[in-house]
Length: 295
Image (cartoon, rainbow, N blue to C red; front, side):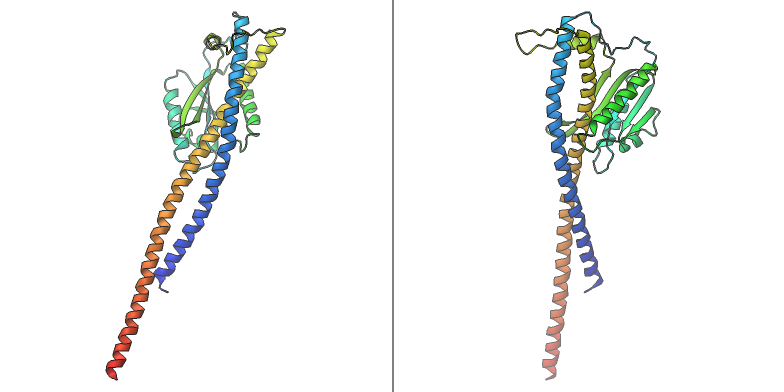
């Protein structure tokens, strides 16, 4: 067999091995999407429940200001939490988010303090003038999100107690129908009068108006903690769902390209093999004719 045929066989084998890897990663991404999407759906209902609970507290005590609101001067930096990815093969997932963050932060005055969640996202801000406070790794399962959220909340509260930050924005990618994902942002802190006013504007789902019984202050504090926790938890879950959707799309494109490459390589190998067979037949015929002429 010629060197060209051997080379083609090697390329076909390598492409086949790569296709197996791509299919495995595609299956893993598809499997991961399900758990994160289910978590997002469940969190939507819970988030709505927490909002209704806060609305009930503020309706019963209109003069109450959210206990998590800081009465500090507005001289601190803006805290920024950005969810990216730890792994590659996600297309423009991190690049688009980084551009979105930079664009949004240009509209906010003052210094910025950044918490980058995910190694790939961390490298995107290495060459900017943003103050990267701490880098954190992304969780690899639903259960691992809770410790990460707790760590973020502790770090934010520590910086707010020092007066280093006065507000916090959260940036992440959100799954979107008709597209893979879209970058979104949310102002998480401070929980000020505007935040309280927006909650009281929520319409109660029934004609029976709620009433907070004993321990209204403790109830409010508990609901505020749940609001902050579920906001970050949902942002992380939505980001992970978007990441796996992006990886699945990338693997689908890669699989399609590999299939096309394998088809071209197989056609080339078939042509080369047929050409070799034809040459051998021509040699046999020419030899036979030569022997016949001599006879």
